[in-house]
Image (tube, rainbow, N blue to C red):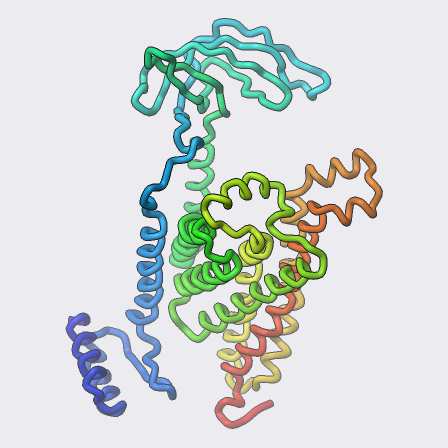
Length: 428
């Protein structure tokens, strides 16, 4: 029934029927739709569950199609050497010999040699038993026990028989799946419908980064516009899934995109003042080799990284302030735009402090090994703070934090203007 009503509605729209007749039509069919639809002053339909959630679903489907298209194999594309490497799951069924012993220098890590029989647990050789030698060093230490689950690299001899060339790592899939399940379960139990919506938004964001942003960069599309596109789309879907397509959602989306863009601009300008870009990053050498064949551009990767890294914190601040101002306006409808703006700023001061710390500490945590090395070797501060690695981390952290700080007045102003009492002709 609802589908039929919507079809009639759009036919009326195409026929150019007047606004009043369309509004009358909607009111007649209110009970059939089960959700009252109203028109705002701009003639835009609002407060309809179908439209609120349908728009978010439409955007998701559209970008899933785009992801599918971007990840189709290119004509004449040659598979990389890494993609041809055969990694399989396995577990230890026999520990033949073990000469490894604890080493004081490596804080008790066992160093030495193990001879083991492994049973392959995946792929076309599943169930087969293969012999291998496992070398334990300080930098490659997959210490095996009977029953240990591992990831192995398989190769083939001249006769086509498989053999294990190396033990890559422990099989951590069980742990990762368990933690993911615990995370999802916690969100569903304590978050209810909002928790489910958060999971949908997070999953869409991850898919966009892996199947949209990276393929666009690989195809030679400038990384900064690509990152801004991903930020805008994922923000719209994540916040839309939480609250539907409401004014509150759109204000938070605009504020979030604005704050992240500010962070990107700061990083970009910093890179112009003192040349830092994708070529200064540790992975640049490998990427340059790949870029020579694919047209990929590396110069904007640093800014793109700032945009993506700051997205979560900026989104948090944007939605927090918007929601707070909406609640204040509902509790006291006579609050004017100025009063709501001041309240938004006051709330934002607490939020910006914690979020800025979160962002700075996240970058510091990711670079902790580098910081320890700088301190252990007692590098001069002049060298530490001017090195590529340290400068990149500082610029990323500070640019993201500036984006968070400036998101506060932006979102507060948008929310206060939208929900303030002065829009009805009065102000505080």
